Image (tube, rainbow, N blue to C red; front, top):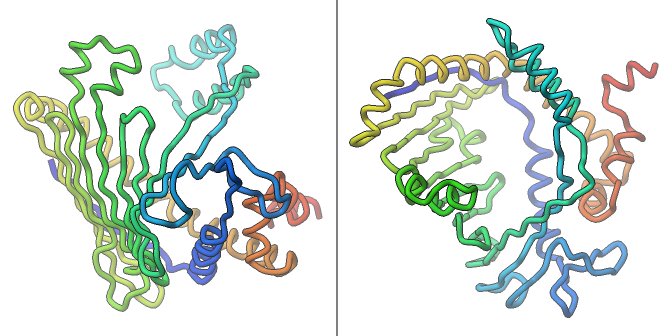
Length: 323
């Protein structure tokens, strides 16, 4: 199966994004760690357990880091969910957007906290490149990330997924997990510098394999003074039973893909306007807060800083409402 699309995106001023990338690189280089490996918050001089240097020396090849993510566990009120399903899911034409919105409204925190860990093993780090392997501690997946620095970086990704183990971890019977799972692999290259380069080029390309299915795709961009003209193509293929599945599902997959792509292009104008507004608001905040380095530093290290900035410098739409 083949998919193609073309469209035009109005150009945005990327100056701020380029400066943010450079500032984040400086923040990374300046990290310090306590004797137990926990990162030291430079504003409080206290260790923080959400980032830990588990092995090696910071920025040296072989250094291993652990990131701890904690998020509240959410649950839907069963009674309200049943009522919502009876109201919306029995209709002939189901409004899934409305259902999702209403479902979010009746989803509340349980009071429990879910904790997960991700490991980062540094392979190389210097002025030109940053290479790191990101992995799940239980070895369900891993991704090699290679970043070539520039005004805008080029990112190369190579990932591996043990779908069999993942399905078994979710409770899928072993025989079924082996039938549906397997080892998934994928590679991708994203060259952000293309959008600044005269004439453009290949912005992204990638390929992936899982079980009996394979996918390949690419996106090229032609850069003009006013726009980024994009052409995208992808191909989905199957072998054995996978080929039969694609043959049977071809029309349904094609219809869903065409609808998703059309919806994305329809949303481009509003997305660009939103991005332009966000850039203006960020530049205003940066100027009044004393510079980009300060804003990035406090956003990373001061709890509640981002919320306080939003209250102090409300978005343009909210500021207009407030008069």
